[in-house]
Length: 331
Image (tube, rainbow, N blue to C red; front, side):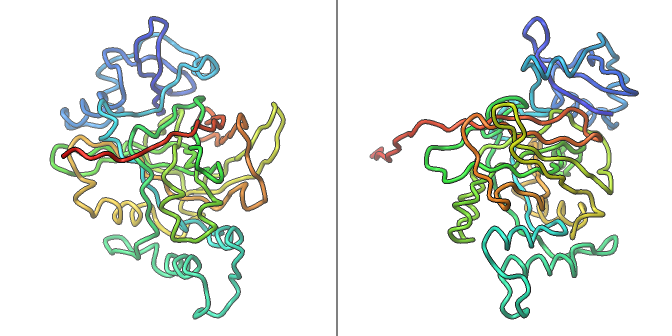
């Protein structure tokens, strides 16, 4: 079952569900957040609430995407209560990509390895603990809140001070915190984590700065567990032609951590277990165009596809105008 959010012919928000190759509106609900809250209140799952609400008109979700009417597959009525975070060095090959980006040598003796390679090895050694046990914590970063999310098809803004505007094709876990502070997973979506790799390459301690950028995820929310093997394609289009294209792998078969271990090390912080909050947590990648020497330009379009997640995620790049910021006193 896949869920989407969109704007209907009357300009109202609506929810659609795809089952058995057909997409229909879900009646009596205007957002996936509202649907999730109904499931929590009923003590049931999303599928049961969809059944209880009932289905309406058959819709063409590809046409909605082409018309720019699709929204992110979940949002929050108060954007400050949607948290966007992620983990890195979680995929087989991700450390090699990071080291290549940083011009490092991953064949050095252990005592001379970069911090990135050391952390990657920690994941290989203890990122997939036995059930009920706690594994090593991953690299973790904060991206922002709901205000930094670009809907599918919308331009991803890159600030004027950024040194790079690069894609990161990933899978994001989508969560809501229930009334008891328990994280509840709704499913997964394609995501473009979008980072400033030039800034990061200056010094790895600039990683936090490089991640404070916009992002996009969706268009569809795949309800249920994550497939063990995910094999999609990441592309950059320039003037309608493919500038760069490469496959990306995800799913636990291609990762150095389990999803459960990554989830634990995010939600172990009480800050991230506040009732009603939504979390979009990105699980990392091993595929970057930047590592292949690609530098994007305004209006280049990122395209991330994977058949198990439905529609492709496409976003052009937009460079924002310079904004002068000064702090003033309130005394």
